[in-house]
Amino acid sequence: MIVEGKEAIRRRLLRLRRSMDEEKRLKLSREIKRNLFDLPEYRSAEVVMFYMAHDKEVETREMIAESLKNKRILLPKVDIKEGKIVPVEIKNLDDVEKGAFGIYEPRGREEYSGKIDMVIVPGIAFDLRGYRIGYGKGFYDRFLKKVSSLKVGLAFDFQVVDRIIEDVNDVPVDIVITERRIIRC
Image (cartoon, rainbow, N blue to C red; front, side):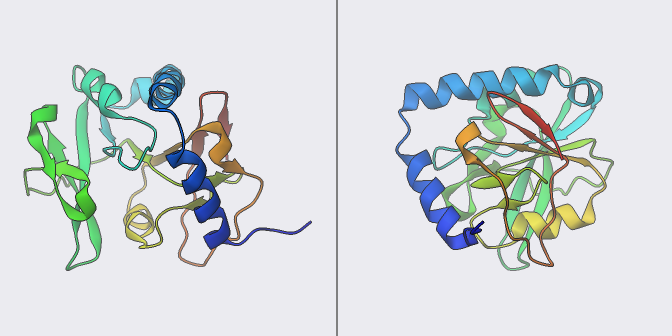
């Protein structure tokens, strides 16, 4: 079996994701939201860190809006100088603005230092063991190394591949949720 390299997987799946019809992306994102919200670990979580979708990722805005009703919600703020993600709490979706890389992030600057029950992780690809391919800058891997939270990747089913050749710095997620399945890694 030939295992595709990270760069080839990244290019192929970004092309596929970017070619998705917007209506279909939103429909599949709602199915992924339903699978996430049905997860016992999500229902019992009090503090959840989401990401703000960009570049045709699984849409999270609706998930965040609903979660704000009964959970504390954090979003990542990218500190480019330090090369890291800082979790910042938001109270509503008006608390965001375009930040690093054109991605919406919290307006606030105060780093959340309490326990995070669940971190929702974006990715271009995930494998069945929970390893992921992002944009290659390592921000999430550095962040995930430091937290003991349950790590949950959201992806469209076509973004799940058999195997990603992991690097020493890669941090796998515990669960991958797609519109079709929940993969416990």
